[in-house]
Image (cartoon, rainbow, N blue to C red; front, side):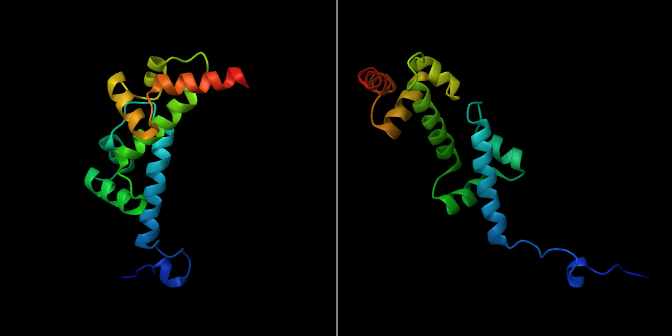
Amino acid sequence: MLVAPDPREEGLAPPSPSADNRERTVAERVSEYIEWNYSRPISLRHVADALGYSPCHLTHTFRQLTGTPVTAAIIKRRIRAAQELLGEANVDVASACEAVGFNDICYFTRQFVRHVGVTPGRFRSAMNSGKRSA
């Protein structure tokens, strides 16, 4: 019986990626998924299912490499997007909340204060008053 040679032994295929490189790719893929989907209703389970990992493995690997849980990364991205929107004069807090994927304005406000240090309304006022005086 003839057996085809392993292409790696023949030097015909690239070596298998190391575990470290595979895990770094996971972190990059998670970040990319969040970037493309933060405005949608996503959770750790959504990200894990989309990337083909268990939620436990995904959150452990992502946190180990980035120091941040997947859910925190989603919230941080949403808050950055909300800051950008609130800097526009014609966007109100409720619209920004909805546009960045939060479905509860109270939760959005708590998270915004936690990450930015002021309420979304005060942030919006400060941003827009700075534009008027400039």
